[in-house]
Length: 228
Image (cartoon, rainbow, N blue to C red; front, side, top):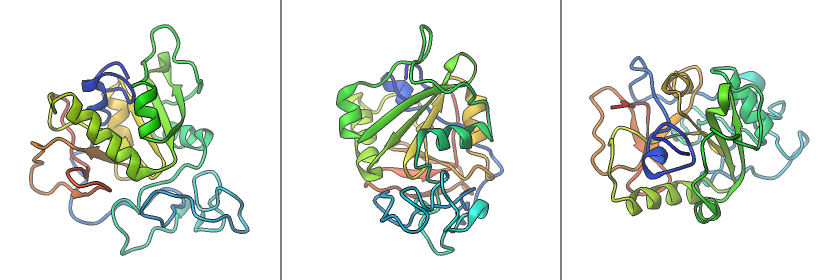
C-alpha cells in the first residue's frame, strides 16, 4: 500500500490498516461470520465432503454455515474468519464496507504493493483491489505465521517508526487495508470478527481492549486502533 491506511505499500502504510470500534473489548473472542479452520498455522486442513474450501467463507456448509464453528475455547487467531478465495474475501468485506468491483489491477491512483520480497516471505498468493477508487486492498496468504513474521520484519526494517496504535486487519488467511479509515473501522466491528495485527514494541492499548498473542512473539491481535 501506499499510505498508512492501505494494506500493501510503504512502511507507514503497512503499519496502519485498520480502525476499530471502541465498544469491543474484554477477553472473549468474536466468532467468525462464517466457518473457520482449526489449524494454528492458518492452513486449510484436508478437504472433506465439502471440498477444498470446506469450513471457509467460500464453503462453510460442513462447519456451521453462517454462524461458523469457532471453538468456544479457541485462541483469538482460531476464531478469526477464513476466506479460502479472493472472491469470498471480497464478499465478506463488502458485507461490512464497500468492496465492490474487485480487480487485480490497482489502477492509476490505487495503492501500490509492498513488493515481491515481502509477498514471498509472507506467502501472499493473490492481491486484489476493490471499492470506490480501488482504495481497499485485499491479500490472500497460505501461511498465517509466515505472514505475521514478515509483517513484523517489515516494521522492524523501517525502525518501528510511526503510530504505535496502527497495524493491519487480518483474518486467518487474508488481510485487508484501506486508505479510508472508516472502511477499516467497519471491519473491526464485533460483527465482522476481524482483529488488528500489531507488532509495534510501544503498543499499549487502554484497559478493556484486547491484546492477545499473535502467531509470532512480539506481535498481538487487538481490537484497538487510533489513527493519529
